[in-house]
Image 1 (tube, rainbow, N blue to C red):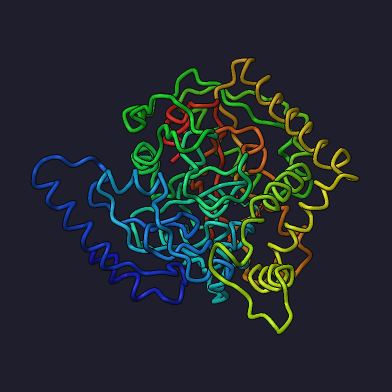
Image 2: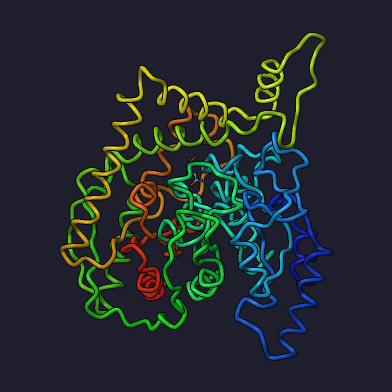
Length: 456
Ligand code: GLN
């Protein structure tokens, strides 16, 4: 814990930690020492973690990197962080992210962007750690903590993990409780671990997840010992390679990474099978209708009354002006864009044309996966991202759709509610990390992590 606190002090330039909690960390570390001395210590006991700012942590600023939650200190602890603390983990502080987890570069944060500890060859230009869990990725990659929590609505654990050369798993929807995690798109959001290795991910996931009566979508299923399932034996596993993920203009390096990954799995005894997921091309448009629709509803609660920021009012302003001014000042541009898109697609005149259609497309995407799993496929291998980490400003200054294209390989998994893991798979020509993604059957995170373990 002390080593991490020192490392954090020396790494301000990464802008990974946005709230520091050294007192809490030392207190928890001391309590962990006592548990260890008594011989009552689970694997996560004493492990120093960073916590994404999207998690409500009792008495500690929890702002979802938004101005509208300025000064908000929850009265309660999220279930996932409580589970980690019950297992003896230590909180070093809260981590930077895109505002309300909306983004792929950590550039929409009220705290400014986090920075990727990796550089392109000899070029000094700062790169994005990805998003929205950019601070988590940067902190783990730079050894500021041993692991971090992330959340993933459309790729926000897997894309930053790929951009920083770490491991990240988005579990099956319902595996981790969403209680106390600031909601973005409730039918897509899941928490998960971001770690240095697959083994760490298995250990941390087990500590984070489990049934929670406070979240009606949390699954009442036993939690496997994920670590014990890491045998490295993948003989006879069937791995699907979906042809629809071979996008036009995909860089050779990504293509090669994918082929090499498939070969590694084949060498380890898996069978590689060509498969088709025909509705893949509709995933991104469906996601960018459903996610903003749910966000516009979830974000209605930020009204200047209940939480955080309230705008200064002029003489004669009423409650409508208070709402308008507070939301105009409190939400950044990307969040406002999502609220507008979401409100539009849910409006009476357009509901059927957009929201309802997107929901139907979502069902088709889910069925694509169900069909290949019914054919005996155990997991699906794809690239995690269409490129390596890009430069800060490089995408955010283009049109917003260019940024959305980053999520092309990851959003299908959230739409279908499946588990997906990103594992580091090599470096590009400029020395930047690239990741592969494995998509698994629902509730089979153990199997999925074991396949990832074989790729590691
Ligand atoms: N980049 C996607 C978005 O902006 C996904 C974000 C996430 O998974 N939280 O919506």
